[in-house]
Image 1 (tube, rainbow, N blue to C red):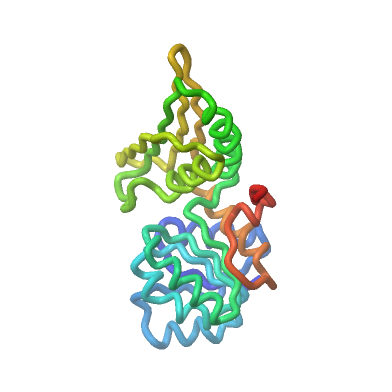
Image 2 (image 1 turned 135 degrees about the horizontal axis):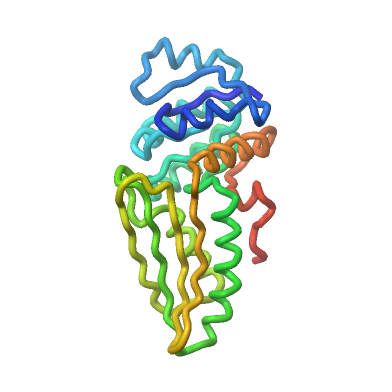
Length: 231
């Protein structure tokens, strides 16, 4: 597979570093600040996929153009939830395929699956309260994180109706830690996923790039991992 990277910060560089491990060749690197010539070169590179780890603002400004560079996209930028309806419409209009995720680590989705099971059980326990906490490095812009919102959505979809206290920490170089807690009168159940190496996000994005090849439509990492919850 041939990939163009949109954004070449910490995550974009990690994707480039590990691309060959997944049989992916990086044939171009662009950003919202690239020149017209650089965009033209990317469009002519014959890419199968665009892998985005830019910023939410950059993605909103560039998504329409990115859809002309490759037939499929992996979108890892965060902080653009309000833009999602328009983004979905753009993907549909171009007949593209996109995997969209705030977190590309496999472990985050294993955590989500566990959170669904426990949330459904806790809904029937009146004396339990729930919380979510996430911690990331000080340069992460959005809080709560997209993954925390994903976990909150999982709780609600599992039938949990009570208040969920959500908190965030931004400090130092923390790659990412997410915890879902269920606290009763005499005990606490805590489900936690901790990232030790940001490379896990790059490997997940590259896995998604291989999976979405030849597909059209809007997908999540749940689809990539075959973990779509039953309706």
